[in-house]
Length: 491
Image (cartoon, rainbow, N blue to C red; front, side):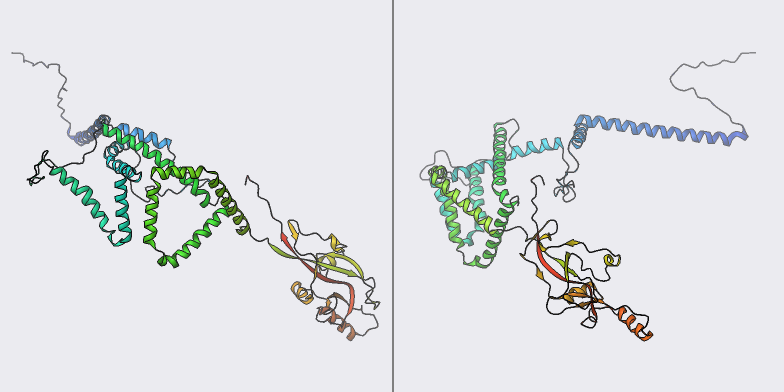
């Protein structure tokens, strides 16, 4: 009997295939387990692919500089505060934030790229600036006089203003471009036209200055000087304009406010009467002549002369005197009326003697019959003399003397004082009404009348019908004004 031959398996990296024959009762369970394994394998593959893509993306960003840009932006975001805090502790509203205008955020690489592009293209602006400086500094007087002639012509004929932009484009853009495209021959003859019909030169192109070139560094130099000029102009404007307009000196800023408002009111009414053409011509000629070197020397000499300094000092002193005398910013002092009641007393209210009154004191309360102090049995509090009556704390007397209140009925009705008799003439005294105590011999009818009389205690009933009681009083008034409080410099 021949023995069977078995093939050998080579050792490789591949997995050895295994054949499994499931039993019929366990077939469903094995299929479920195999599906779960396939799902897990798919999840692991998808996560591995995502991780691989992220790593490749990081490599690409590192090569292109995007990763560095993110790191720099995160560093700058930590250094720069998110919100500016004002002096009052509240965040300052930024009108340049992305809430109002959608613009890209700050980025150092973008800032560097934009600066290089801007610097390579800003040369034409500095050329124009240098030409203006040469024009107004009278470097070539014929050019300056030609400008003044054209300026005067435009001022006298304002209808030509719309033609100015077209003239500038024609003379400073079109003609130079034509001359660059059709240059004259180097040796023109007398009998031939100087310019050829067909272009003989390429058109002039405005190209940005290449980096690391002389023009690029010239632009950086001019940009540096322009930033310094702007900073000086800004600081000079802040130093010379802000003190007059920020109301740090209330009187000075208020006078400027009144002056501007007056000029605005006058200008709205009389603007059509002003010769604006003549003023524009004079202003243009004056500004241009002031740039002449000789005029600059004269201006410096005038500023350094003693006469100019004295005139400036006199004008400043006059201005400050006028401001201090005519500009009043303090509110008028608060005025109030204070009152005091003169109280007099007599010992026996039933003796019938109306002249035997004893000066008692001056009190802040009228001490009427139904006041709580009197019902408790306490004596009134006050001072015996007018001179001892002091104004309230923080107030000063405005009137020199006390004034008697002649309308006694008014303050009696205002305070709802009852059981008193008001004197309409004379000293304006307000008397207590003393009702006689009922005796045992008086009939019940008399008791009812007296009881009714006690219940109806009012000053109207006391007009001579009742008997005057123990106390009488009258009201004195005087004006006071609030004392001025000095504010400390720290506040």
